[in-house]
Image (cartoon, rainbow, N blue to C red; front, top):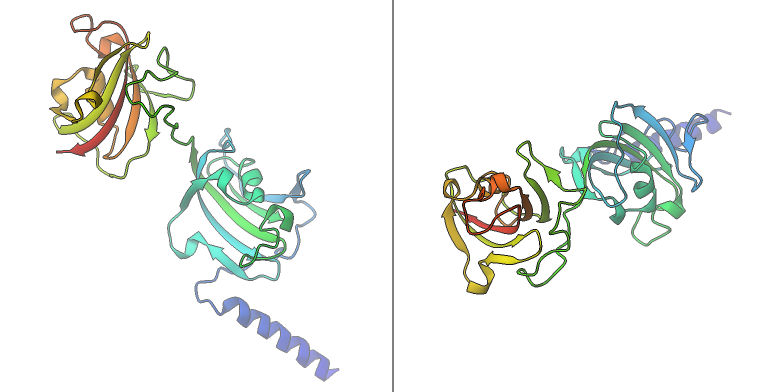
Length: 275
């Protein structure tokens, strides 16, 4: 009997050492081996349990960009990945990860933390070099947003399909300016109302008529933001270098009946540089 006790104790110590060999490893939860009786289970076999509830009411869509903190373990308690080690949350498209994440995070709301038990068929499916078997993740959903809209034409002077009105997923400011990101930028700073900016752009009336564009001239335009129509002054300050946006500008923020074209206008604007 003493020999048996010694063997058991040795096994426990070996397991503990294996789990703590990485000084940054996050300790596994007590229920890592299997979902508890009070865990929720979906038809696919995904089990989950809310660890920290939130008062949010909206859920991410399948293709949304989500920002999360997470930690993952195998069912023997080995910590194989965690954003906590780097101290920064991660952002990724929800439809570009394992199926258990795509399904599970859609159940969450911003501010919620949840534990998932993901069966192998919803995880890495035995893929070489990846953790095998059922996986356990603690996920904190920090925020989520729709991905940037894809540009629909290789011709930047061709009127977009939504030229007549802003689509339902376009953002709207208090002034009535609507916009949508077509391509994310690489910069971090925004221009100010008096900044000089260099841009490529195309502008259309709501019936799809192109009335101005820098592209046929093969040279971007440079101007000060306080010397253009109010919709541009406001809208460009939302952008960063490298970004491209579509703006739906109401007449009162455009030429207000005093310019070369009348009515509401639509612009695609690419911010090349803040001078």
